[in-house]
Length: 421
Image 1: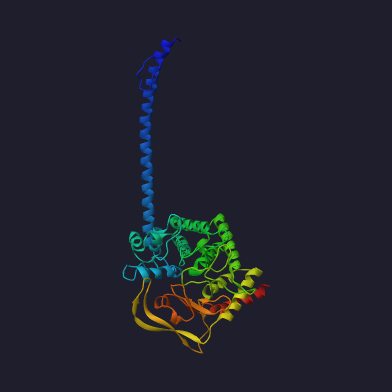
Image 2: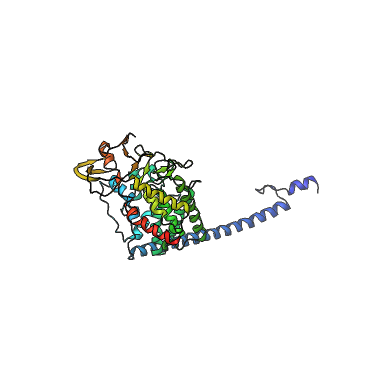
């Protein structure tokens, strides 16, 4: 084939040069165009069918939700969510009059929760789950910074538990999926040493129910409580492993004074396990309230190890050593005083009473057990009267947290474990 014939037979994509090969190419192109048109028609049909069935599925899902909303259910306890709901009502909702869902309207409340679940699987805190408020309004009131996921104020794990119970009641997969996403968030957020942080400081946080709340949830999964009976083997195993790490780090955090174990602080360092400061008025200390919650959790563990038994015994001994006798708290009415996070209608004073039952301070000095408080300026004080009215009425400085442990729970636990030994 000479050069002239080769040139004649060459054809570009537009078919400007013709020859035998050019003709064939145009013929193939024409066939391709025909095929392309048929392919486009088929694709249009496929897309139509996809959107059609998606629309049907969405309608069916909406019908299922509406059907579920119309059903009558037994109310699910909202008490575990009270902390965040109370924060909303005291700060953001005190000037509002939003309609409320009845506790028995569990599907409405669950849909409220789904509307606020973040992409990472967690939830923002301090929201009233019973309130009928548009989520955009809530975001505008709180600000985006306070819409991020957190465990603070008994949050995220409480929504997971609630939604798991709604799933059992309704059999709607949307709630199961939300639970699984929430659990994935918990697993991702656990630090290598075993703890979870709260809102105020990046530390192992026992304050505001963070550690013990998550650990209780994981134990319920590990124990296959009814609301988690559906969990997969993989999810069950992950929960048990995370719980094991959390218990191990909790035992490491118990404060030792002169070779003797005592209680726990509100926050501990992830690496050194030592007590750390959080907010300006939350100084390192032995904290009666958090210690009581930790002990109560540890006493729930079946066949406890010698390390767990020792942690309980030494903490109970510390309760006895740190208890305060001869005083009680008295509330007195005052003119309503509005602060940023609450409105005070009563003040709190300490009065002497030799017949008063023992109580404990929120913060006890490490090494002396002396009760103390602090103001927002970070200065430590030793009398409730020295605390500014805003903090005096907006924070729990004294309480009876260990009382039930000493009077009932510990003796029962002691007898049970004595029989098992």
